Image 1 (tube, helix red, strand yellow):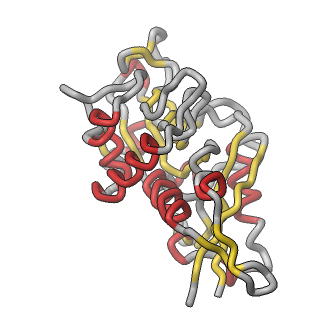
Image 2 (cartoon, rainbow, N blue to C red):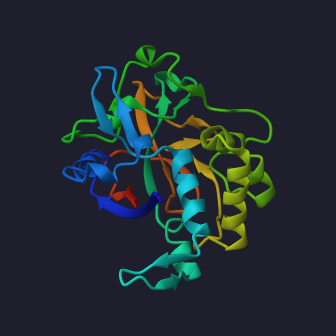
Image 3 (tube, rainbow, N blue to C red):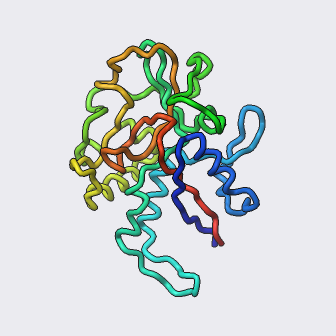
Length: 247
């Protein structure tokens, strides 16, 4: 029976991490989960990082795995700390946040090709891009009543958080994720369990008007809470999850 196991890979920047993740499968193609194979607009098939929805799924599945088999065939009962390990580490995704210039409406891009194919030597906190070329590639960042950014969520608010539900795509799975976070008190030192932190923004609009169209990745986790969503600059030290297919 085919199973997946997960390890965390930590790198000095998003670009270096994306390329290192891809290179880690060279000569080990049997370990690549099929859902991580991405075909670019140029027709090349390459490995991508996981989406936000996939990371949520992985965290829940790994938490629900109660035992693991040791190399000698014996069964190890996993501790609660082992089951929560992916929840307690920040993780980059291939999901992008498009931030148009002049504080135009933002968009979420689930599998963002510009992030997946980022140059290994990329410099700078963002990818500068013409947002017109991204038309119809994403979905508008949800706004409206009972949608909160840049502030902690209660469990009740989290369970109906539309931006999260849109990104996860499976409401029942997301509810299980929220319940795991709150029931196990996975919080920051300040007591924050879940939130959606938008980079540099207060009340959605940035204090500084953006002078160019910007693209940045979303990550699951922040210095506020490892279970929160956050838009992230490309130059930070952080983790990628490396799935591995085992028989």
